[in-house]
Image (cartoon, rainbow, N blue to C red):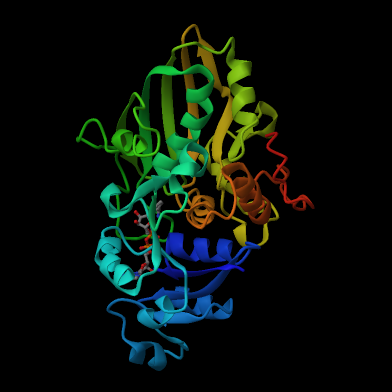
Amino acid sequence: MKVRVAVNGFGTIGKRVADAIVRQPDMALVGVAKTRPDYVARRAVDRGYPLYVAGPGAPERFGAAGVPVAGRLADLLGKVDVVVDASPEGVGRENRSLYEKVGVRAIYQGGEEAAIAEASFNALANFEAGRGKRSLRVVSCNTTGIARAAAVVVPRWGIEHWDVTLVRRAADPAETKRGPINGIVPALDMPSHHGPDARTVVPGLAITTVAVVVPTTLMHVHVNHVRFARPPKDSAELVAAFRATPRFRVFTPEDGVEGTPQAMEFARDRAGGETAGDLMENVLWERGVRVEGNDAYFFQAIHQESIVVPENVDAVRAMFELADGPTSVATTDRTLGLGGPLRPGGSPSPTGGAARHDR
Ligand code: NAD
């Protein structure tokens, strides 16, 4: 029997999570909830997702706009096993009492405080912690990137300390009210919240993070300096470990990907159906991974709009104990085309590419 899923909050993250849920063999998307009948609401209707009115939304406005709705959020919650809450930062906390009243399990996003859920979650770092839980929080985009990298580095070599400078995108492409549009803004709260947040999924991680915000919408970039307990023998060993891990894409010098513009262009160009334009893997550059003595330096780029999408899918599987971590990750990656072909215009691998994390 399929786990019945609702998505409440159908914006940047919610619409992608909904598109991902419909591709899963063991889940059914029962409906999505939205506050306003805007172009994104029409997208839900166009894709055949039953649309419900969320929070303070007015059904009459949907009717007047010619956007058909199937009811209110409360109606939707009565039909599902779990709700993925992708409402704006802080709104998940307001929604929690409703979910608890109805008795539906809930998955929250990284904009919420860790205390909102029984556990914070990342599929590579702590899948088991999600097992059987009634509420989970998928950590934010930046923390997801860090947690995945920690899942590669920590078990193999141990770390003494890890410093990360996060170069954060100012806004998502569809946002017009955020900045800066010219300038670099240091986040003066030091260290930034990302380090403590990473420890919610990798307990005890010796990490310090600071952040600056820059005028781009094309991904975050992390500048990492890791001091190992027992270092890999050379850069190639570290690169090989990233390449061998699902949800990492390591570009070679020949690929011609100099930075985030080409990485996003690659994502737009590749054949990927509904996930075209997204890049759900941590992006690394072979030449941007360097081991020197006990230390390593590496860059990674994070597509903020999509990196948490596979993690939400795996959170559902962990919660309902549908699979173990590696099986869940492989299923999610195959259905979403992660690890697919590098060459723009190539067709997705017939096996979905889950075994093709060779880039
Ligand atoms: P968004 O603003 O793009 O989408 C939120 C959606 O929720 C909108 O469609 C909005 O109309 C709707 N909404 C507003 N009030 C609501 C309510 N009361 N009930 C239900 N829906 C409501 O936001 P987003 O970027 O998708 O962020 C959602 C969550 O995901 C936040 O916690 C955020 O921190 C987290 N997150 C965002 C990113 C990112 O880069 N965008 C990355 C990772 C995690």
